[in-house]
Each structure stands twice: as C-alpha cells, then as structure tokens.
Figure (tube, rainbow, N blue to C red):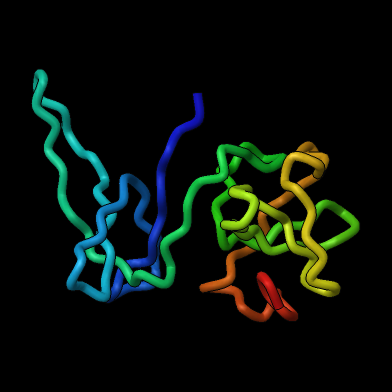
Length: 133
C-alpha cells in the first residue's frame, strides 16, 4: 500500500515539513500536519503553515540512496536530468527531461540509478524549462 504524504516549505523559513496536507478554502496558504508524540490512543498534531506553491506529493518511490521522491524534485539517472511532475490528464507522476521537456513515466526509469539532486524550489538553477514547458 502506498503512503500518502506531502511536503511543503515553511512560509517564514527555508526548510521542509513532511506529513498530511490541509488546505483551507479562504487561505492562500496550506498546512502540513506533522504528527508528533503519541500518548495511548491520542496523537498530538500541530498545523505548520507552508507556502502553497511548494507543496508536493510523495510519489511512492525512492531513489538509489533510499530517499523519498516527491513531486518537484530534480533527479538524475546518470544520463538525463528530470523534474518530477504530476500530470492530471493521465493521473500519473512523470519524469520530465529538463532539456527537451519530454515526459517519461516514473516507473520506466531504472530507480537503482536515480538520484535526487535538488528540487525546483531551492535549486531552480538545475532546470531549463520545467514541467509542461
């Protein structure tokens, strides 16, 4: 079973928070809910406000170092560099070649060679075009 988790960069900071996602209809921000300490059957959670534009969904895949791959990551497989994108029209994560913008299904990549080298938010210099142009 795939784990549904998200990440987002804190509004007043430059680091990532991981957990569940909450959007509020009248807000320009999103919230990550990182679950904390468990006490019996009670779980204590806080809402962390994150920049809505930085929210990315976990793909369910890991790179060659065992690191979780998220939407918005920049990855390499030894030959090409890709941006990890979500394509609504086919409901799938794609690896989009940053040079040609040609999309590849994530599952078609040899994940034993794939390495996360950054992300589109903290390392925009790694991209040429980005997802969908």
